[in-house]
Length: 367
Image (spheres, rainbow, N blue to C red):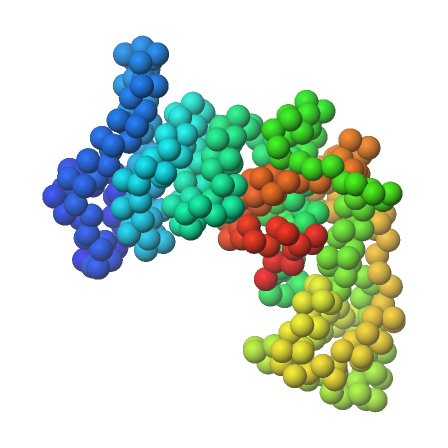
């Protein structure tokens, strides 16, 4: 039995049969046949290549197929390999291969593989598949600045949601590779996404809210002053039920913010999601008590939110200045732009990306 974590997929073409996790086998002939299919798909494109470029392109195609296999095996989705013979799949395979070969950026190459896996998993003929196809065609033209711009604009529509509030700061820090690109993003990058169907104009009298206000709303239980323990003890004496466990781990709704344990915060970060969980647990009797406690803890101001993030990473200042700028205050992301931005956030943070079906909501609460 071979463990997928130890198996070298790169050796697959030199074996007759490779066992994976003892259950799945991949025939070496099948792999080579697929490789020849991919080369055949782009054969006409090769006509304009030099012999050196053709050999280089074949090496890239081999690398592409190995990456596809690795991902399908990890996801236990090797049955999707059969879709490679589907004419509709081969059309987008052609585009993904050209995209993969034409870019030298390894991060972009990885994104193309991820998108092709998503395309294979999507139901044929759906809007979701059409969005993925558009992303595959566009992404080789995107550099790190543009990917980071789309990811930053996506932050207006989704939120990080760790299980406990004290983990949120680490989640923000995982965004650092994207945040660090913010000072390099230019008006040219903004013009590019405008011209490539990644954005939509916001109609009406009111522009998009500032990023600071988005954070205050999305993390309304996090971005507020800590409460005093003595006041909490007095409140708990009047309403002992406030200390009931509110999750499956048996934890109450509070955690202390320092070693002296004289200040507290909520363990949750968003009141909407917290109240939904309380209702699901039939603990809605706690909601009025929580709402009363919220009146005793002051929310952060926009300036305080800025200071919090700039203390984590000074490049957050460039993020706020960018997203609150006149160029972007009336520009939102299209489904295509949001999909690419969300996928890039997932790539950087190594977390699951949001499903496309979630993008219809004005603010996505990631669970």
